[in-house]
Image (cartoon, rainbow, N blue to C red; front, top):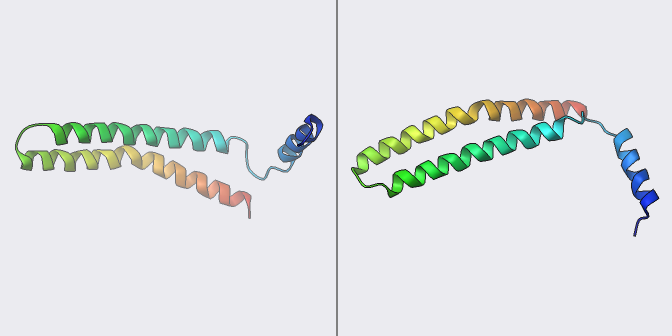
Length: 93
């Protein structure tokens, strides 16, 4: 079992040996949380449409519109994740 001193030394070593910016992890977590929120909201809307009464062709159109809107809302976050991925790759080159 590591002692407190060993643990602190390990933490200090990892801070010094970092190869990426410390702001990457919070940015990644934030982007993933935003995407999860968008996905959950879409899922709730989808379930509401599917449970609703009415014309099936109207439901299909609403679902298609929902998916288009969903992709549009996600696009900037996905692009930001791709940029972050490139930034991370750059740290290891």
